[in-house]
Length: 87
View (cartoon, rainbow, N blue to C red):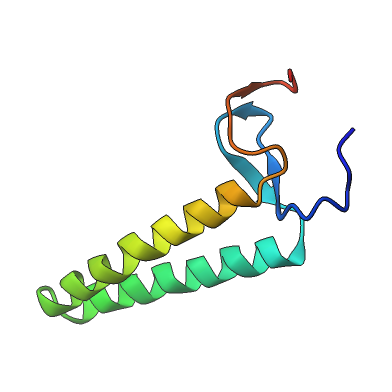
């Protein structure tokens, strides 16, 4: 069993690669912040087809990269392929 005080923000997925849902308030805050950025990107893209879309892409790509790096770093057990709890 893993230590509940290991500093992880996300639970590992049971099947597949990556992380599951957040298990700490920091993970929920990171997810909420990312979703707000995605919503802002949608609004930018709607605002103007040329300038807004360029701004949305310029904001979306680094925000996604940062989200994925932090989620991988803060997932209990790291990101690796899992198949129904086999370790």
